Length: 433
Image (cartoon, rainbow, N blue to C red; front, side, top):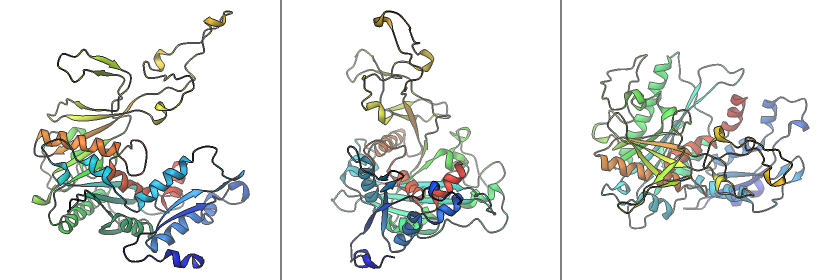
């Protein structure tokens, strides 16, 4: 299949190859007698992605055709631009923007630390499948430069290829293989996730060995990781329980790297983006930088706010504004910036045109969301504040997008390794259905 392009697909020494591919998705209308799994078998994207990954070639796909024929952009081709940026992310390309985002003004030097993101997901069974659900674990590490070049390195790791490698090589190795098989033998829910936590523990140990003891942080998503480390749960915050072994009520390890002694992470950064758990900002009061400045109500904000807690350590909320909030809304109105749907204006019908008013309930409303950032551990309050600010900057400065991401660079890059896996999207779609 790849014969005509053989010469172009053979990398030279110190050369990375990225394949930018155009694809056509199989249409169910063209195969009325086929079920979805049969359509998967003729979808070239997951098959060619795995073939290219085995040749250590990162790939990115664009849809070239749809039911109406060839896709022709009517304006600026944003999908192609974003796809190209994501291809550079697959190649592990970093530049000085990452260095600028990491470096802060605090006396706690976050730029001297490596920053690891650990992504965890349970791959549920598809209809007809047997066995335990699969646990998928991927991780990346932003490693500070060893020279004055200010270029950070991005490493990758996965549970199917548990070796720290340059990000592009780690992702290709992950994509070239199937998802990890379920654990051998019958295990309890608790034992399965304790085993997954121990896998991450070994990955952190290997990272310390490879990087000669470089200090580091670990960033995880609270919802995905709390079943592995119950020290991430709200009810455990501010406590130091002694864990002597796993049980039905508690995990074997309280936090990532807990038992590594001097090789333990400097801090664990817990993130939460769940709208059901993270409070939604509804307004902002800007007090100004000058002493005695008059507070001013603002409609929205993209700043980082410190929140007092009842367990002694502050948490931070990174306020986010929807991407299309700043776009062109036609009339220039931004419903939701001053009031919620509970306060909408009703329709007014009148013979006088000037008194008529269209109801607002059916129109688009915009509202802020928030990302909770909670550094756990760390040598001081100043250090935790510096880590929270750095995490917010790495959410704002992404590797692949022109706008803010839900996760900072290390955790986002780890999640993308999984999202781009040839088996992910088809199985995830089936699970959603």
